[in-house]
Amino acid sequence: MNQDTNKYEEITKILSNAKWLLGIGILIIISIPFILTREFFLEKFNFSSTGQIGDTIGGTTAPFLNLIGAFLVFYALKAQVKANELIQKQIDKENIEKECDNETNNLNQLYSYLTENINGFQFTSFPFEDLRNLKKEDIQGIHNGGDAFYVLFSQIRCHYHGTIHDLKNNQSVSELLSILQITDLLLEKLQNTKSKNKEILITLTKHLFEYKIITRIRDESDEELTHEFCEICQCNHGLPDELHKLISSIRKKLNISPI
Image (tube, rainbow, N blue to C red; front, side, top):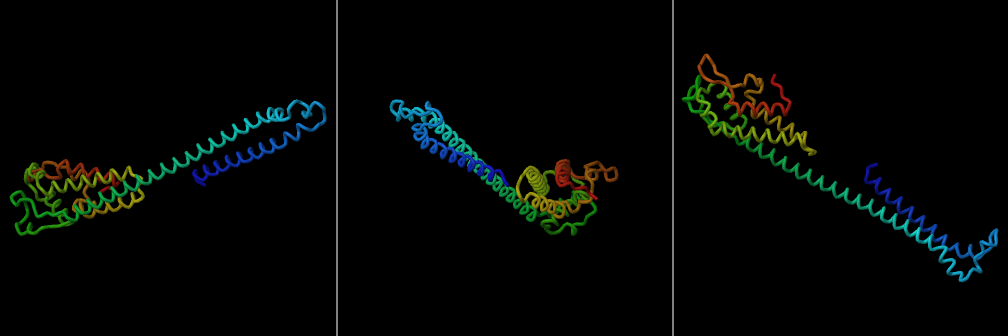
């Protein structure tokens, strides 16, 4: 039994008590004239000869009527307060449900926006002069979606020998950073939401992240992705710090541990 049902039953009980009290009051008012004009047990209880009988009965019943009236007012106010509490609780519940629905819609829109950006992501290649161990024919054509992420991370990890400044300012890398920021933001919101489809969105986002974005580096640990200087080729290798931090943050939110 929920709290709303309990409140409703409590209001019903209060009104029932008020009805009983009203019934008792009516019975007392009807009985008083008869009782006061009869002699019961002792003569002094007979008020039939004490001045105006109406004044006697009125003076005797007035306190009872006032007391009963006070109780009836009390019960009415108590029932009204309980009813107001029930109405306010229902309003609060509806507001919470509306807020939750709005939050769910916002999360769905953010997820849809993320999906569109991932599926629409394109990458051709970094400038050929910044690459090593690749032929020109190996970097022809435009890659889309998951394949574009794979080629991009592959070139960063294995072939890119340009400056970190040029890498960060590359258009495709900037778009990759934006997509990772959206992913991280979505997961942060999902961690704090009460939305009913929370778990579904987390599962779908995890799938996009692992099998669309970081497929090429999925099995590499955070340490392996660190940007460090290579003595062999005298060049820095690994992911730029901003990329590395975002990927690590998303992995933690998804509880992903590389194999």
